Image (cartoon, rainbow, N blue to C red):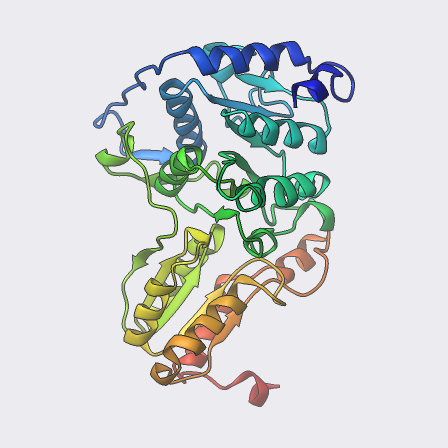
Length: 378
């Protein structure tokens, strides 16, 4: 890997000397105590703050952790997730790269082979397609192909899914894409608690993790408990969270769609329908136990996702319920997903291509036999 780096990447501004020094320093340095955060200073935290503090604390606690990507240093991140990290940790551990996803993703995988814990930022996960060979054929498969001799503790993170007015090439959801691959773990945080606890878990994990954030959630504030502010706070990978308990219908969602599902549940409650909302948090591994336990209680299921419907996350959830809890269902499963078309640029068409709160409400009513079926209405 260093041999490749010595030849320098792209425009030549990413010197192998910096990476080589970082490798040597990290492998010989001792751990540093993580920064403590006040549990009384604030009760709200934005997703941006959650990600920033999680990175800060993990870099402070483990000198093997470093961040690399486009504009993560001098510019402090395209979305300011890495604000202050270059000043605190220096260019050895916060590395600005050229615009070459295949190049820096490959270097990151090589560094993970070497024993470091890289956090590779894609400015948008749409750009990860430039580097997908490194994610799938190098990162995901190396542990298996080496009979467990090679670990690849690397995190690939960045915004995923639809934003606003960025067109078809910058609006795709990659949850189902990467969840299809054995060897990868795929996490999809919704709240500040999710973002902070899951990113810490991802960085500490011995396997490659695809960490799918949402651009529109970065500035959203969420109430957090004192526990979340603690530097030792971490969430388990593969465990969903019941955001709202209910008894009439189960609604599963991830990332931004969790907020939509909660809004839909509030509307439904005013009409006498008690909806249970499950925040999946982890797409691979998927918490099938939590999903099926909820369906066995409510006897109905609505899945919600931004991605394309065919071969999607919702399809996998539906299959899991059919296989494990079919006899508990009192209604056909309802699946809400993005439109099966490239994302339109026009704002009115874009809104029609992405699930809305009303779509979830109508689906839940159909599952509870509170509305006219779509076929009859047509």
